[in-house]
Image (tube, rainbow, N blue to C red):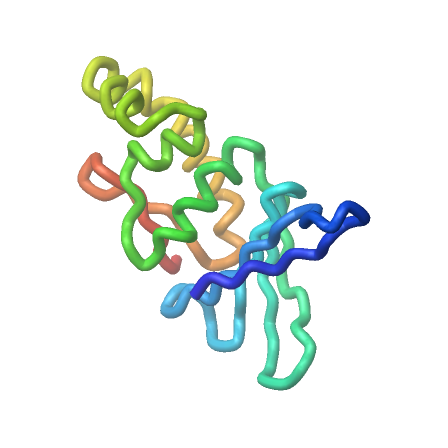
Amino acid sequence: MTHHDTEPDASGLPEEEEIHLALPELLPTNHTLVVNPVKRVLIMLYGESGGEAQRVKVQNISPSGIRVLIPLLQAYPKDCPYDILLTHLYPMPVEAVQKQLQEARETTMRPLRRAMSTINADLRPFGLKVTSLRNTAYTLERI
C-alpha cells in the first residue's frame, strides 16, 4: 500500500511529498515506513488504530541512497531490476542503461553496488536489508 501526503505551500503546490508504505510482512504490525525524498529521511511510525502515530526510528539517507531506495520500496513485494534502479540513480532512459549494462557491466554496476551498501547500513536499524537476486535485481527482506 502506498499513500502520498502533501501539504501545499503559499503557492498552492506541494512543498514536498512524503511516501507512506505499510510493507506487509516486512514491518511489524501497526508500523509504517515514511520516506521524505526532499529531506532524504526515512521514518518508522507506530500507530494504534484511532491513535496518533509515533516516531519509532529516524534515519538520514545519502542522496544516491534515496534515489535507489524509493524504487526498491515501491517495487516491494517484487524485486527491482538493476536497469530500473540505475535509471533512478542516473537520469537516463532505460534503453541507454540496458546498453551500458551490456557493454560495461562492472563499471556501470559499481555506483549501484556502493549505493546499496550504504542503504543496507541505513536500513539495518529498521530490521530490513537489501539482497541481490541472481545478478538481475535487488529486493527488500527482513533481517
